[in-house]
Image (cartoon, rainbow, N blue to C red; front, side, top):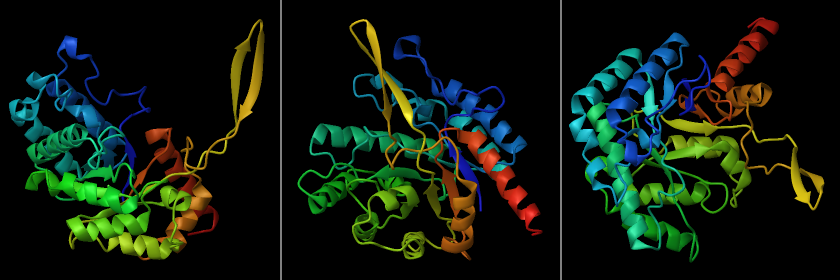
Length: 314
C-alpha cells in the first residue's frame, strides 16, 4: 500500500511543483519537468511512492485564448519520456486531479469543451511519460443543476467529447455535497471507468447510508484487474479560527467553527490505524492523503504508525 500526497512539497525547504510564471513570461512544460524531476528525487529519498502532480504542469496548455501554449506536450516529448522513465524506475505512481473549474458536466457547452481540452492535456502528459494505467486523472461529476440524474446525463455527454486516450485516464470521485458514492457507482457503470472513493466526502454526503466497508468494496470493484485502485483519505479540520473585522476604530474578533468537509493539516493516526485494521482489512489499494501539511503530514503519519506498532510489540 503506497501513501501519497498532493502537489506541494513542504519538506527540504520546499520544492516548486511546476512553472508558475504568468503567460507574459513564457512559462514552459520543460521548466515544470525539471521541477518534477527534483520532486521525484525527494520522493525517492523519503521512500514516498505516490504523488499527485500539479494540473498546470504544462502552463496554459488548455487556455482558450492562448493557443500558442497548446503544443507543449508534443514539443517536450523527449523530456516527458525521460521524466516518465525516471518515475517508473523509482516505482512512483503519478496522478493528477484538475480543480473546480474543470466541469465536464457543465450546462454551458463552452465550459464543457474547455474541460474536455484540459482532460486531453492531462492524458497527453501521462501518455508522453509512458505511464501505466494506474496513473489516472481524477474528476468530480460537477454541477447538480436540474438534479442528480440530469447532472449524470450531462457528464455522459461531456465524456463523449473525449478521445479514447483521455477516457482511458479518467476516474470519477464522490463529492461532499451532490454526488454520493451510489451516484458515481452508477456513472461508472455507464461510462466504464473506475471510482475513487473519498472517505471524508462519503461521511459528509451519503444519502443511501452505505457502510464504510461496503462502500470501499464497491469502489474497488470498479477497477480493472491488474490495476491497483486508489482512495482519498483526510482528517476533518477541528481547529477554531479567529476572524478579525475592523468596525470604525475598533477591531471586532469572532470565532469561526470549521466545517466538517474542511481538511486538517495532519492525518489523525488513531483514526487512520482504525481505517486500516477495520474498514480496509485484507484489501489492496493506494492512499492519497489530502492534508494541508502535504508531505510533512505523510512523514509524520508514518512515524506515528511505526511508534504505535512498536508500543504494542507488533
